[in-house]
View (cartoon, rainbow, N blue to C red):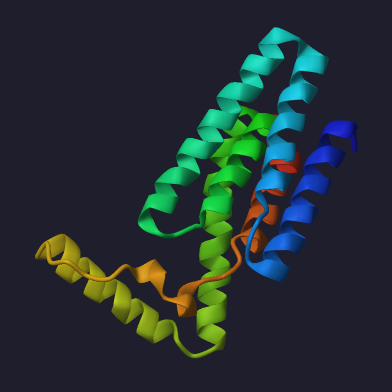
Length: 170
């Protein structure tokens, strides 16, 4: 493990602890993560590294901001992925978001199956699709009820680690 991996791991660990304890990722942590990612790439790769980190920051922010607009994630998650993008670059941020969503889906289905609400969730999805997409009726958001929420960091950590350690992006 090099300094790059160590820094990403520490950032993820602190964000995970904050999310589990408070269900919130502090702005100061995200700002420090973004700034340190930009500085790291500037120091190790020069101006091209800074450009790489900045484009990654914008990509991470944008990809997860689209999820935020649906109510699927919180604003802290958007800023977290901006900071991760500063470290991982645009491809790393995008892949991390995709992997995190996949892990969140599996974790969510396991939780729903274990607490006996999987059938009700499937019914809610069918209701949402039928009324919103087929009929165009206004319906309340699926992701607005706390019964369907999990701390996203429990999926982000394995998603990011999958990208950092098991892909050839880094």
